[in-house]
Figure 1: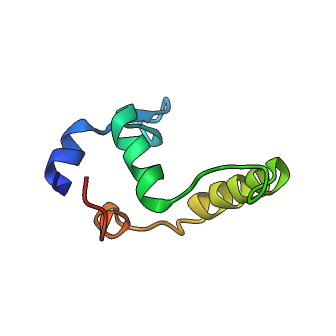
Figure 2: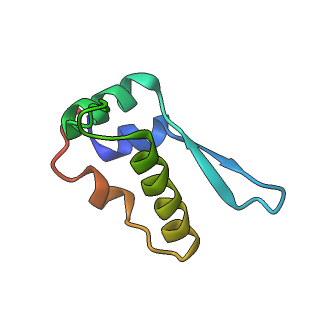
Length: 79
């Protein structure tokens, strides 16, 4: 699956100002991403507190514009 195919399956949610706020992707793509990145959330490797802390930091980074192009995030992932 290439980036153009993925872009056609991704949906963006916007706020009242029509600024993107969230992304919807098909569950099958999400599961493949998790599998490819080996992000199995278990009590042994990630506590709930650490996950919440990381999520908060990700939101702060996004607000500050510290983001990556979609193409760069998909590099090396074959779906």
